[in-house]
Length: 553
Image 1 (cartoon, rainbow, N blue to C red):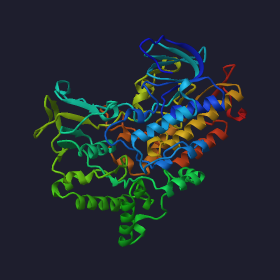
Image 2 (cartoon, rainbow, N blue to C red; image 1 turned 120 degrees about the vertical axis):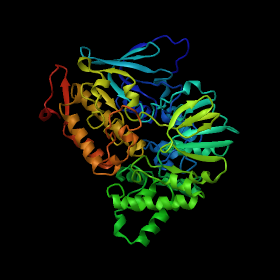
Image 3 (cartoon, rainbow, N blue to C red; image 1 turned 180 degrees about the horizontal axis):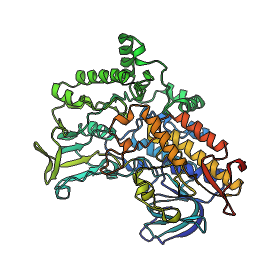
Image 4 (cartoon, one colour; image 1 turned 30 degrees about the vertical axis):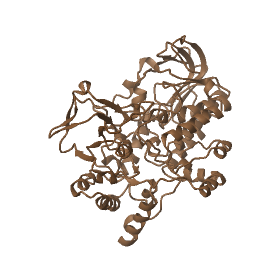
C-alpha cells in the first residue's frame, strides 16, 4: 500500500511493525505472516521495495557477491523459477528480483511505502511499541523489528562552500531515479571505496574528464564478470541444496570455502601460481587461497605485494601507479573490492588522480574542488563517501525504551547489543543484522535469513510459553561486546581505519561493529542460546515476573 498527497493518518494495533522493505524486512514480513499468522506491517520510507538496491542507482552499481549465492534460499520454487543473467548482477537486476519476490509472495498488501518512521516509544504499561511516522500515522505493536540496512544512512562530508557550488552534486546512495547524463561533463568523484571504484569505472567511459580524489589507496581485484552460461544456470537449478550448504559452512557466507593452507607454508613459486590463478578467476574468491591472510601480517603482505605488482603492471604512469598502490592498511581489512577495469581507466587521457592525503580538500568552490595545492574544475561532483554504517539509520530515529532511555544515550559510547539482535532497555525490539552480528562481513542474504528465522522462532517460543517480553539480561550485552572485540582483535581488521569502526564519521565512537568470528560460529552461538531457553535474555510472563532460565521449556 502506497501513501499519497491525500494520505489520511492511520492508527492500528498490530502484532509487529517492521521498518524497511529490503531483503530483511520482506522476509521478516513473510515469516511472521505465513509461519506465525501474525498481523504485521512494513513501513518503508522509499516509494518502492528493495532497500539498498532501490536507493543505490549510481553508474556501475553492482553486487560484489556472486548472483547464485546472493538470493533468498527459503523457497525451492523461488530458486527454480528465478534465473540470474550475470556472475555479478547489476542493481537493476537485483531490484527486479526483489520486486518479483514481493509479487510472488503477495507482500505488497502489508507494505506501506513513502512512510518514514520518525519515532518509536515503548509503552511499558501496555507492553507495546508506539510507532509514529512522518505522515502522522500511529501504530501500536507488541514487537518492533528493524530491517533498516547497514548501508542506508548517507554520509556527505561537511566541506565548506558546498552550498555555493554552481554545478550539480550527488551522493551515490541517493542517485536520481532517472539517472544523470554525464556525457561531455567534467566530473569529480570523491572517494575510492567499493562504490567510488564502481562509479568511477563507469563514469570514465562518458565524461569529458574525470578527476578521482583519493584519500586512501584501495585494494581491488578484477571481478571477471560475465554472463552466466547455460551450463552454469543448469548447475544452479540442480544444486540449490549444495550451494546453500556451502554458504552455511563458509566463514563469510559466500558460495566458496576458504583453503586450509597457509600462505607461508608453500614455496614462493606455488604461492605466486595460486595468486595468479585467483586473479584470473576474479572476484572475492581471490581471498580464499590461504586461510591466514586476515590473521598473519606476514602472510597478508604476500597478497598485498602481489596486488601492488598487478597495479604497477597495469597503470602506465609510474607516479599514478605508486599512488594507487600506496596502501596504509593490510589487504582485505577494509571492505573488499572487485572491479571491472578500474586500474585500466588511469591509462585514459580523460582520467586523472588527485592524492588528497598529500593535498587535502579544503573547500568546494562555485566551480569545483579546491585542495591545498590547486583547484579542479567540475561540472558535477559525485560523493562516493559512504555511509554512517550499521548504526546510523537506527540512530536517526527517535527510539525510546524503558524509563525514558533513548537509543542515542544507550549507544553514546558505541553500540551495545546482545548477539546483534537486541538492545538492553528496549524490550521486544529486534535488530536484523545489527551491530555485533556478522552483517557486512558476510554475503548479506545469509545472515539476514539466519536473523529473520531466529527472530521468528523466538517470537513463536514467546507466544507458546506465555512470554510477554524479552530483552538482554544485565551484563549480556557487555559480555557480547567484549567477545566481538576479542574476535576482531584476533584478526588484522582493526588495523584499518575503516567504516567497520565508524572511522569515516567525525565524532563517532571508534568501536569495531560487525562480528568477525565467522558466520558458522555465530550461527552456532545463536542456536545454543535458543536451545538453552534463550540464555542471556530476561524473559517476563503476563504476571510481570521474570522467568528463570531453569524454568524455561
